[in-house]
Image (tube, rainbow, N blue to C red; front, top):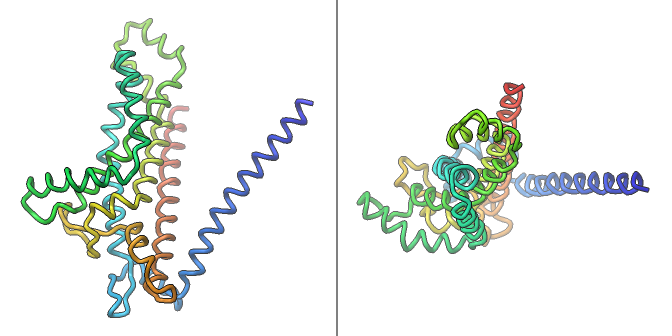
Length: 287
């Protein structure tokens, strides 16, 4: 009887996986079909490298690609040390009372709507950046990256701390028996053993940074240009989709949002495959 239940559960899990993969492929195919008018004649790479100039018949999304990658990767670079440090305090170095309090604060932050972060960025962060550098409006790549780092940090912190908590107790007891300090325990035992969880947290953080709309829409400035510095305004792919979606459905301008969607799919897939390959290399070295 138990084997029957196990077989049924296995079939259900397999069916769920097939449905999930099929939906993902169908969505990508839907965007590909609707974006075909912009790609006729083999101009797909032109679409990725040309500027956005609808009045001159150019619907390239290159400025939005640069803006997306710059803001997303910069936010992850900013969020990673903050997230790793907070997770270290929660799981290794902090007292039990402080760790419990910090974990609850982080869990609360994950439930705050994104638009709240956007309002805080507009009324607090943007004026600070404008007054500090005395250049531009303050709605720039730096402001969007800083606020996006705050947005993705709670997710990364929780994944990091959960991976640290799953390190076998026998390993930790061995360090204690050898007289190792808490810092040594974290650096030489917890962190190496939790490498896969750290990479997973990075994937989720990067994926959320690439796919976020409101922070970039409200704070980045939405200027369609290739930014020359962190203080320049920029538009991301998600912001472009949100701003262009009200256009004429039959226009090439509207069709460009499907190219943006496919680009986001590709970037996210490459990020996942890249981090997983690093994880496989890390596991191979450990063996």
